Length: 182
Image (cartoon, rainbow, N blue to C red; front, side, top):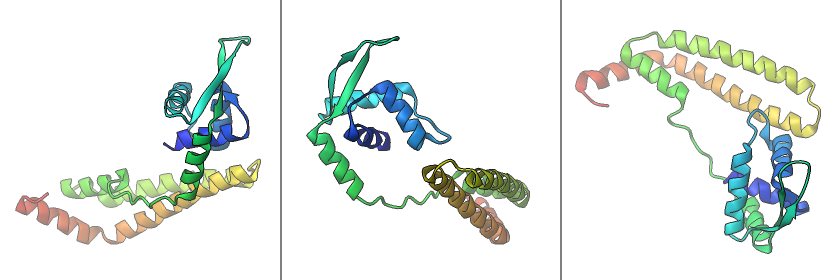
């Protein structure tokens, strides 16, 4: 859903074709995860079907013909409503980290060793992001890196917390498997 609103926001300033929208999206929001061309065109087709964008016509170019899209008044209204609506925090209760620690404890494997290895991986990523932050080309790039850094820091805090609770967690996991609970 976020991609649809991002495309609407990119169209609000001027009409564009899908190829340009994909590259604009990647420059502004893609970071380490660019959007696929197919996803852009599927999203544009859905937005057109929903009356939020309209195709202005087809442009011939050096490659395939390109449809130019413009945001409609309904699209502007929808974008405004989305931008004004705060997002609910999404606690990630079943993250991979949590699942691995729980499964390690359930199976009697060394969860502490897993947490140490995960901490090492997180610290390496944090070092890479910190170096990238120092050389960020723009405030936008720096903000995206800050966002990633804060999430890595939160994971590190959780890793420390989980390690401090391993004996209690291990006991609970043993008790659950002894009684047949899951």
